[in-house]
Length: 470
Image (cartoon, rainbow, N blue to C red):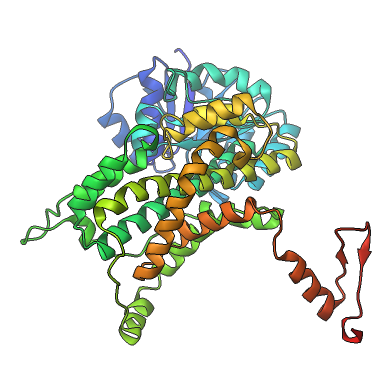
């Protein structure tokens, strides 16, 4: 019997879709699920070159060497459990791929542990949701170059295509770099969704627009350099009618305003804090979800404070062109924060991540795919190491788009609509392009109460002042 080209363990939504994707490219796929009934259901629903066994020993024997085994199981202990179960049946040079949203430090630990045993471990970010997994996701594999050489043919075949028709996959770098890049990708995703939600809120409360009216505006915004997957589906979400109510209504108006999360946005913020790198819009997006979960308190406080929305100081006709430029500036700010975090982390971890290639593979399949990535791809091909905000292409856009962002933030503040992601995106741009910050005053205060010392602008060294003697 011919052995399988590829194996997948875990037949949840993503695992099942990826299994179908791999098989559709002409490969034989071994599949396994802890609950064998789920495997049988999958086989009953999908014809093709699939094979399975009930136990790991027999299952591993169905795979051609060097074995290529993709784990699509819940991040955390389940990954370690599966590795422990299959490890006794593997041979040197076999490859285990973790395609879940694992924490990159766990990936680094696993890669080092398995390397000693002669097994390749690849932490691979997978973006695109169920549809992307089935038709072509964006793939961000880390791990050794040797494992990449073995995997790249299959990964190239199953990946989405970028704006130029090339596979949305590249070798990100060693050990945990693939999962790190996916983590920051998700952090940027948080920021983009929060910005969209705040813009929706301005139109809903300040301009009293209905869901389908806002959908039309979002569709108008989703053109040319602003075009993105999230804006595209945003219009679809706003246009969806609720089929469960007797009175015609739009589904979004009946969805409880408590945003859930799986933790990758929080990981991005935590890692940035640990490294001393600013990602304020991403962090505000995480906080925005926390605040949304305080539904009971928000209802009570809204009544206590009698919160009202003020009338806007400009017409909707005048506001929309401003909004289009404002959100683009905020998007640049958000992406810049994520790219800066990746750049500095890569330097610390000695990963040598190619940001041009990273921008390219995010152009298809993934959730944050957008025309902005074409600009970023070209920018980083020409200027590989400079700060994102120093990229000439981004600087050119921000020169004409920052003032509209300032106008949007002002309108939101005056109208009483919370827009923390927009405000923070603007503050980040202002702070990063200001030569003199007020941190000199903070250093003076710290030295006053804690003798923490300070540096001077006119002399080298550290200094302390006896402040009460002056």
